[in-house]
Structures are given as C-alpha cells and as structure tokens.
Length: 98
Image (cartoon, rainbow, N blue to C red; front, side, top):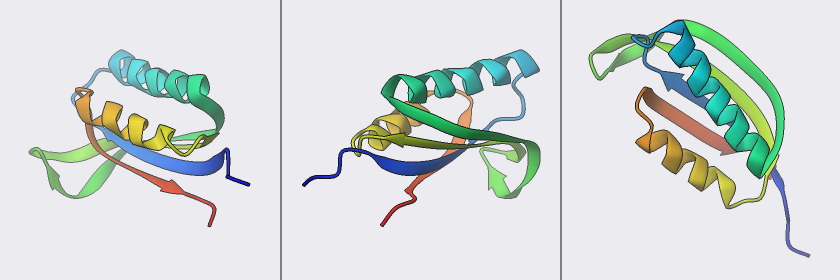
C-alpha cells in the first residue's frame, strides 16, 4: 500500500532587515500554509543567529524550524513558495522517515 503521509522537518532563514512585524507575518504565513496542507507539529523560532557564511551580503539571519506531517508532494510546493517569497534567504526540508 502506498504511503499517504510522511513526517518532515523544515528550517528556513529570514533576512534580518525585516521588522519584527514583518518577520512574525512571514512565520505565520508559513505556519498557515503547512496547516492548510498537513498537520503542523512543533515550531521552534531560534531567532537571530550568525550565519556560517555571508548570504546576499547578510551575516545574520532569523532561523525558524518547523516539524509537520503531510502528503509527499507538499514539501516541493513549500520550497517553491520559499523561493519566491521576499525575505527568505535559505531553506531546507527533509523527510524524517525512511
């Protein structure tokens, strides 16, 4: 039988030049997107951290880690939305199950 859902973990980094309201709005946008397409688990906002290397002339970023469960086709759509959203500088989504 085909697997209908899987567990995923995604981390995304927002540019630090956003205001607190803009940062909160983007985090809420991605939470709502995940909730609409699956089951949102733990959301851990790490806050501003120093980047390992400079990205787009930025040395810091606002990190957010989310755990969720969804159908296997949703993570690709989530990453597509990350790529077209202003303010998101990096992201990574992994499947937690083998």
